[in-house]
Length: 114
Length: 112
Image (cartoon, rainbow over all chains, first blue to last red; front, top):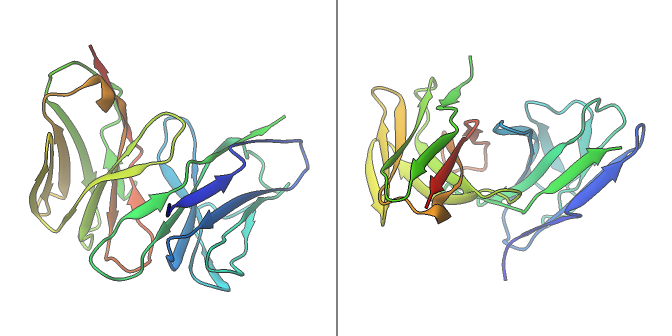
């Protein structure tokens, strides 16, 4: 089945640690995105990538880093510089061009700082 | 001011009611208007999308776009308990792989 897989579903981080969230897609989409969602709030864009080996900062990139070494994979690292990392993280991908603007989302990773 | 503003909710209605969910926006260059449904602790999924102004109907759901007023709506007829979810509006300039701009979401509860 085609889709986006995020792992793990739940992640706990100690203060001062870096953690990496995985996102893999087999939809052959060029573009991939990372969003953060806080309770009662919408999606805020962290980083996005439209092509392998290239990515752009979104609205809240500070304290996060990404890589795009393969088309299928777009991992997100939450660094110790992110002061308030507890949130629900969503990865998405989108087909480039055409007439269909839909973004497909993974099931999310809930990160909690302990 | 946010580029996309969504009626905050929460909204609670009895089963069978007609529901209206609304967003306003400030960027007149938006061309694609989307509604996503997000169940608790899940990723959003696309419900409907509309290109430019007009109406689009899909079963019990109708999406309406008024570009002159910069206002979009999603109507749900004969609402069901299974419609209970958070609804997010989203907008984009084109279908290229640029980013979409999302509203904050409206949480709907349909009571049996």
